[in-house]
Length: 227
Ligand code: SF4
Ligand code: SF4
Image 1: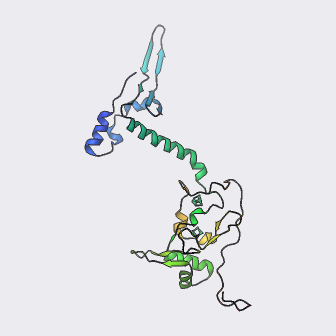
Image 2: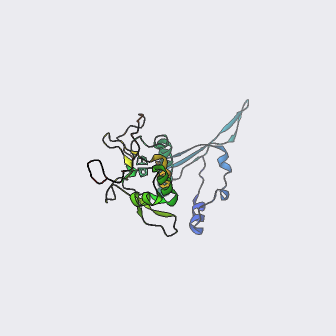
Image 3: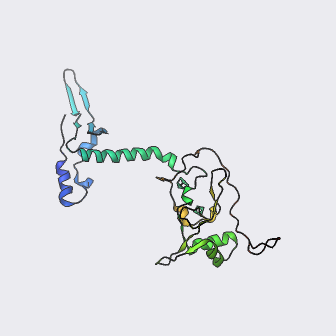
């Protein structure tokens, strides 16, 4: 058993303020790493051991080294945290990679920015003019660089209100009423690491969405009411 001291490496990082680059490491011992384990107190690295047996003697070419580092609990805890996070993500990924059908929690309390191209797409989807789409569905706040023209309206004034295009509710499931034409901001939204997920919804059941969002007609209804 041998102890490898990484203090010099950490001093280098402290002195230069630079993360230690793998090129600066003597990584030769890692050629024969068999196992690395991290717990609250130790980082344990086990190396391969190759034993060639002769008639009356053994030749050990790669000794088994166990490296334990427990002088700096903060360091060990930090490394442990990274490993744990990586493990959790690996474990969570298959579940998180798709939203549970009908969740759409992010379509409330979040205001997707829209570009001119987004408004044009939504206008084309409804067969409406650009100007009317902008007036009806967008809170106009052009960005300084002119790329965004504003954000999508909500059904009310509260920041937690839902997007004007969000559909469904009675079943507890929601869906986007303009899915094919939704803004890029919504397309780019990733469920990975999402903290808003509606955990009550099953992920595996098939669920058929309802009708698409239909803009209210302008004019008067047969009973004379303004639409
Ligand atoms: S899981 Fe997150 S990203 Fe997906 S629909 Fe729900 S709130 Fe939105
Ligand atoms: S446009 Fe669709 S996806 Fe985007 S916030 Fe509104 S309902 Fe959600």
